[in-house]
Length: 184
Image 1 (cartoon, one colour):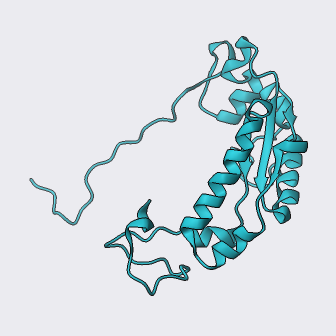
Image 2 (cartoon, one colour):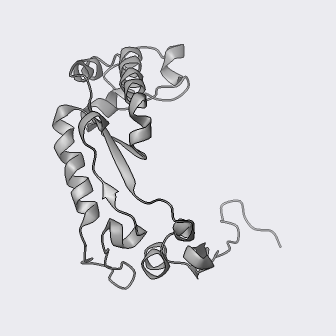
């Protein structure tokens, strides 16, 4: 007996993978595993802290500050409480403090990036963005994680338009033919 081409083939339910936490403890639930056992690297004593750096437009700095503040606070879920657990805050969860950026690790993107994004000048936008990231590299010894905030208005201009694919609806340059630089 053959299966008609319009029917889906058989499927297999794959169980949740068992994740490894500190002291080789296993759990299928990532948050519960971290709460109960700590991160895998806990026995190695690393990290001692997680130092952040910000790269964002001036208007985005407050949003990043708010995200970091939220990560350090506890959170009680309101729905799906049979699956979501209370979040105890970053330091309690990872057994390491989250260190907000200060001074040179708070890097403000140039204001003219907004204009480049509005003009959909992808090449100039990429050059300027990578230049800003490059300047932050001199501070690399002072942070562990870089949070890059790109506002939605700027992201629309980064939409890739590859040959043979329709242009995104939000793309301001959808009237032109794709060029080799579109699929960098």
